[in-house]
Structure formats: structure tokens, C-alpha cells
Image 1 (cartoon, helix red, strand yellow):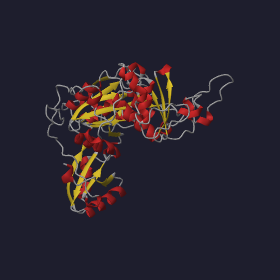
Image 2: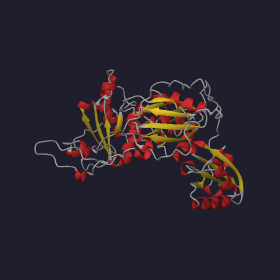
Image 3: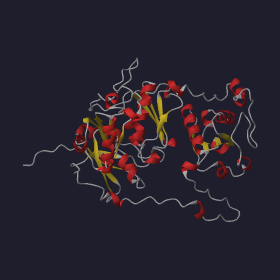
Image 4: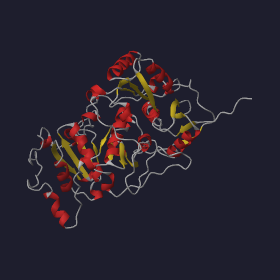
Length: 449
């Protein structure tokens, strides 16, 4: 009689047919106990995910069942159940390759010309090249055009603001896409519904010809038809309304050293669903709450202290998650968020639940070191290239000067400590030649743990 095998594989259905292979691969990647996944497109688009224990599989079911894969365009809810049997390690992407590829949008020059008397279709622009912010529905939240213009006029690289009553807000143009993204990150924590526009203002604005070619704001010189507030008081356009109980003024960003919240912008564009982002940050010490924001393609994660928030940023960036410190703390924008809810069947010793007083962090923040004195090698994403923990350990143990190895499932690899920085550098060179993704760590292992 065959020995009983505990099932720890999850079946996920209800995935939209236009979901990309990368989005599905990252859906559960950062959940505790994740091993590997397989896409099956023979009967619709479904996903099988293997975990290292049944408890980890149950936690995945708790987190994802009845959630929507795409929060900005909700359709059928996900159906997440325990599979009938375990997925074998030999199951790979053979079936997944049948998922139809995404059809790229045509470049601007291939778009057909508009007939006479009709409005020309919007020219497609690469999202990373757009220098304009769209503010939709701000009037419903109590922000007037004067308050919006005054807020964005303070941002670096501001060029012009164009109101649009039909959308309840307007457009703010900046001198570069980087400045536009920075403005979005400053506006969202303040309650402003801002996002990168579909195209730059010169394409969006239509008749706003006076905006094109305008120079960035220096002092308070506004381009074209815009009316500048008083040079003495940049909020002059909104003060009269405030005095009569009108719309509230957006808050000025906090001191960066006091911010305990991280902003994740554009994660969905890189193939990280919001549920996967929340699962990743909830496993980092000091996590308090996560607030999704579909318009920015990610959300905000609040931590028990600014130091723990900074540590979360340093952990997330090597995983490819677009994250940085927010402009203000999450609680400053609308009250203290509720503590996270966890399923009753899972062990939570790796979660740091906030207390009445700041808790002692489970992981000490990394101490900066001179890169030339680091004696530790970091291997990020090795598992995705077929190198498991034991293979990495054995490989590094064969390098001269090896001291210790510590696995890290979150980063898909681990750390190897050596007797000297020179020995660590030699190990990196040997590893790269063998196809192992290795680099000198940010600090030595004794400071990392």
C-alpha cells in the first residue's frame, strides 16, 4: 500500500484570460512556504501552486480565495482550493507556454490618420515617457482647482496645471517623467486621486497650446495662461475658500526621517499583483497594515517605526519590487489603519504585530558598511534558475575561505560568509562563471542577522 502523502498544492481558478505568465508566476511567489507554480491553459487559465507544507497552502487559500486578480477591473473572483494531489517537481512550464502572448500596442507612427472633422485618437506613449499627472475625482473629495494648482505648483519640475471640470480635477505637467512620478507619490498619501496620465499634456490638452514648450516654474513664474498665486503665500489661491469652510488644503509632506510608510508604485506593471505585494510586506518585521491603491498599481505598507520601514525598502528592492519611502505616514492621511488579520491556523512568530508601545524589532536594521570590507555573498533569484538551497550550500562550501551559509526563501537564495572580503569576491567570480546569480552583499552576515 502506498504511503499517505499530505497534499500541499493549491488550485487557483477565475484568473482573467489576459493575465500574463509573469503576473501568474508572481501571484504567490512571496507567500510563506512557496516552492513553485505551473500554469494550465487547457480549460481556461488556471494555476497550480506547490507549497512546502499544508499550513502554508491553507494560508494561501485564506489570502486569495474570493479576491479579485485585477482590482482596477474586477471580474470573476478567484477560486482557490486545495488540489486533489500534489504537483510534481517535474511539472514545468510546458503547459504554461500555451498561454497566448500579449499583443503589443502599435507605435505612434502606425496609427491610422483621423478622418476630417473627427477628433484624432490619442497617440500611444510609453508609460515611462509621460510627464503629466491626471487628477480624477478630486472635486468629489473636496479639493478645488485652486487648491490642486497650489499643491502641484510646489512640486519640483512643475510647468503648468490645466483644469478639467468633467473629470472633477485636471492635469499637471512636469518637466520630466521622473518629476511627474514624484508628484504622484507626494499627492496620493495626502488623499489626492492622482496618477500618471495616459499621455503627456501636449497630447491630452488639445487646445492647451500655451502649455507646450513652457519652462519649469522658477520662483512663482507660471507659463502661458496660468495665474500665479502670491509669491509670498503659495496657498493664496485656496485661502479664501478655507476661510469660509471650503475645501481642505492638502497637507505638506512630513519630515522624511519620521515617515513609517513605504510606497509601492507600478508593481502591477512589473508583474506583481497587489495580493502578492501585500503578502510580501506582511512577512517583514514591524509590519502594521497594507492599503492597496489600484491607480498607482500597488499601495502603501505601514510599519511600526521609520527604521523598520527603511529596512522593508532594502529587502524589497533586490526582489524587483518598485518601492521607496512614502512622502508621509499612512496614519497621517486618514486615521490609524486597523491591525492586520491573520488566519487562525497558521503560526505567526515571523509577524511583528504592533503593540501599544513600539515593539522590539525581530530583525536589527542593517548597519551600513564600506563595500570593500564586506565578506558576505548574496545569491538572489538562484531558485528561479534551478539552484536549490542544498546546491548553493555545497557550491559555496567548496570555495576557499567559506565560513557559513544561511538560506533566505524570500529572496530565492541565501547568503554565504567568507573569511575575508577577498575570498568573498573570488567566490562571486566563480559563481557567476557557473551561472549562479551572486554579488557582494550590502553588509557582512554578522550585521545582516
